[in-house]
Image (tube, rainbow, N blue to C red):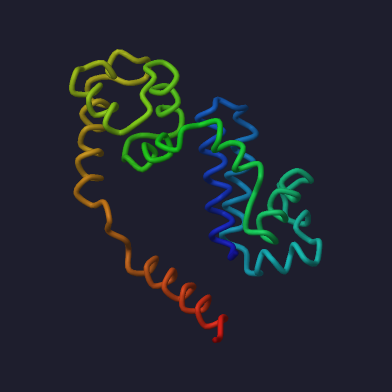
Amino acid sequence: MNNQKIADVLYEIANLLDIRGDNFFKTRAYRMAAQKIEVLNENIIDLVKEKRLSDIEGIGKALTEKISELALTGKLKYLEDLKSEIPESLLEMLKISSLGPKKVSALYNELDIKTIDELKDACKKGIVRDLEGFGEITEKKILRGIKMREKTSGRVFINIASEDADEYISYLKSYKN
């Protein structure tokens, strides 16, 4: 795994913790660790192998263990446990502009909205605007974000597609007949 992929996982954990309603400081720790890993000049796997991960400011024992597990195995039990608690469709909602983890959490916990289709329907019926922190304008922004997402789904930035292609090619080259 490269630095960016590990950072992406840490951001995902922070989002899941926010949706679950965990402590602000805990979610912030994951986001800050992700930011630091994104800009590292060294490969995270080297730091893990050399047991220097905890040298990075803000990465304590618990994060060191989780990042090490992820870097060395490509998997993280903690993430899988979080994903089993929270419907995956809620993470899809985070891809809608104007929706962050706290708003997704409110939609899920207060209106039992689990899918984008349910969200779209609730917005059209004017149900979402009654939630604290929302309103008619937010409802319209959500509908606009859903419409934009529907238009652009399936598209990928060329740099991301190229990076993924390079990884697949490298993987395939490692297997010889």
